Length: 356
Image (tube, rainbow, N blue to C red; front, side, top):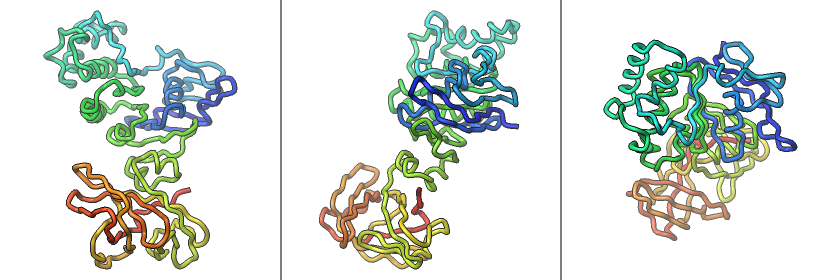
């Protein structure tokens, strides 16, 4: 039995359909992110899971018990869930230790047990040395650790996080991604994480549900989402990519300015008609001489149109010598091609994802 199950979940505000028929199951101890742009329905979904918003249609179940339906919902304080907000929502008049202890004290847990569990939790989040400080004396990352500790110490059945790193600077966000994943690996709390940042979702999640216009377009493991996107939206939202359209005649696939043998592609490519591929910039190779023929790979003569040096890599825009198609290519910082130079672009069809 799944720990958390959303079935046909929808939420309508007047004429606006914020969430449209979501189906999603989380297993016990799984970390799933709801990823998508602003206004796609991910926070509304999270608030329905928490019990702050009632669904217009569908149900939410935990361990087989219905928590939410149009007929009525279990109140948030009876759901055995913890939620962390963007603003952390820790008490400014309480010390770190008092903040972490607050939820346990509300549950009338004996003082000795409270002290033991709070002490253990502060050790886990590396905050023991700051136990007597107040939130105003902490950095943003330290306040986030307090919020995590307070939410996990009560041992919730489900942990909900709503854009928890959005108020941190870039360096702290990167650090806290790994911290959140470390804490999940230690406590294995079933977690739903809302974010618009694909890097956060990729680092923290077991699976990612990509949302668009109130619907889930694809749910998959991070690597599968990146390498095998099923829709154009997913391919474009998860990392950078090129979209190229070709026509299959059964023997080869013709693109604007070049063609590749159909036999080099995986079986999901149609034998006839138009097909669109997602091609990641780093999945192609750029060289100044024709590359050695490799199994399944094909090369095309191109001209360098634009370039940008970004320290760790070059970003190039190239155009096949015939046709008007342009492609973005990422290479090593050692691969220095001037604008106007001719080069060879090598494709590996196994890394070209056919999308709907």
